[in-house]
Image (tube, rainbow, N blue to C red; front, side, top):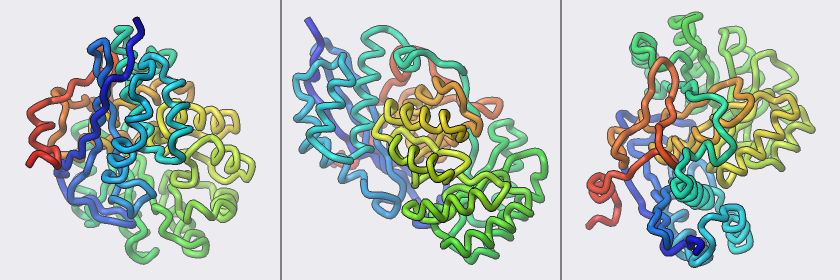
Length: 374
């Protein structure tokens, strides 16, 4: 008898961060996760996660909206469907709701986790197998204070936890941001890569000025300097400078990837399972970039352990991943809702062992941090 989906629960979880995390559009003091529990008729449960950055300040989906979409539209559509046929289940969701990529990604992860557990294999094996057992993982220096960021980077280098550091810029003037980043790069020298993420904050003229100065300072990568809609500006900047320009918000799925490849609009694509609508969508986007000779990078929505490890299983299967990943989300959180948090060692994130994601929810912590606990 085939296993069917018997129940789905979407839970809002509010977790404190280890420090304020400054972005161009918001400052985060905590992170809200949407944890999905998908129960099947054979007793197997799959888990997934959807997480956004800064509520609605980053994109069209918020944690509250994700839960509402799952509870009202997506979960009812999956009731009684074959839990082992992930593609058919996701196709059904595509007919029920347009967009809602983050919500769909969490459900796809839960379906894949359950099926991999059913087969007794890691999720990466279900996807065809991991070509790398670990993933390089950078750290974002986002205190906004130059001296504090340098001290933080030096400590992480000494611990051999990270040797690539990203700076979130775009809140201050271009020259102030460049001065901040340049000082950090001078302090770290050749011991570490330093990249910047502008989070769409510059217009094309400011981007041209800023990138020229960043390139002169030895910065290794510039992420999404202009708004995602302005693809031609992104292409002009990519053609103008030697420092690689990465598209993040401008590339969600394979359709975006095709258009950017046609325009020669970026040197690097940032891949995220949430913005791609799930792991399979991410793999399709990666295939377009790879075929076009565009380098790939494993991005994050600052997920907790569930979302981070789901992305890691997908990224581990990619033939090429030239720029590593930024899967540091669990490290930004003071606590999590899994019994064993991911391992970061020798500059890499290590995939957990065991079937499915290789994670188990901590029921006590989930009960403590869930928003509706009262």
